[in-house]
Image (cartoon, rainbow, N blue to C red; front, side):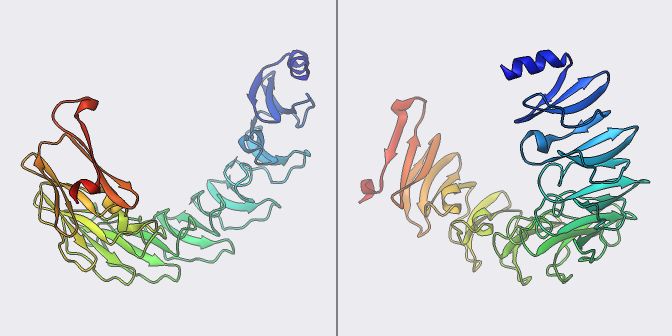
Length: 356
C-alpha cells in the first residue's frame, strides 16, 4: 500500500530502484527517496549510488553544474567538488577510499576528505581502492609504480605493472613489464618482491598463476616460443618445452607434483625432478591426475585411446573410444567409456575390481 501511494504521489519517473532507496527524476533532475517516500537527498543533475541501492554503503556521488561530490544519507557533503569522482571504493562500500580527478590528474582521498596520494595521470582502482590491500598502482609520464597508503613508493617505475599478486593482496610478488632491450616493439616481464628484489630473469611472458597469486612457489615462464617451470628462488625446474600444463603444480588445493609438457607435436608427463614418467603420445588427457583425484591418464595415439597409470600399467587396451572419463571413486580410479555410436547403450562403466 505504501509503495502504490508513494509512486502515485510522486508523479515522476523512478529511474532506479534498490533495496531501501530509489532514484527518481523530475524536470531533468534526480533525487533519492527512501521506501516510505521520504526525500533523502536534494535534487541534482545526476546521482551515482549503486552501493547505497544494494545496501552496501551510505554514500553517493552527485553531479551539479559539471562538478561532482560525495554526500552521505544525512545530507552531509564529505568531499570537495571535483571534475570527476569514481564510485569504486567508498561509494560502493569496498573501502574508505576513492579516486577524484582535477585538472587532468587524479588522487586518492579517504572518507574524511584527506588526500592520501599525490596527483597522478592515472591510478588503478584495484588494490587499496577496492579494499584488497594497502597498495595501489599509479601512472606518471608513461610509467607505472606501486605505492602504499602512506605514500611510500614500493616499486621502481616500469612500463607496466601487473594487477595480480601484491596489489590485490594475494602475495608479496608482482610482475613488471619493460621494453625488451634492443627493440621498440617487444616487451619482457620479470617478477619482483615487495622489497624491490628481482627474483626472476626477464622473460617474454610470465604466468601469474602460482607464485604471483600466492598459490604455490612455482611459476611458468615463456622465452620466445618456449616455456619452462621455475621456483621462487629462480631455479629452473623443467626443461624448455613448446607447451606446459602445470595447473596442479601451481595451485595449493590438492597440489600434484606432475605436469604435462609438449614438444614437436607430442605430449608426455614429467615430475618435479624432471623425470619423464610416461611415453610420448599424440595427446594426453589428465584433468583428474592434475587435480590430484587419480593417478591415471588417457593417452591418444594414431586416432586410438588407452588408459595408463603413473606406474606404467596399461589399464585399458587401445581402441577408438569416443569418450573416456576417469573419475574419483572412494579415492580409487574408475572409468566411464563410450564406444562407437551414441546413446546410453554404448556407455560402459569400469571399476577397479574389474581388473583384480
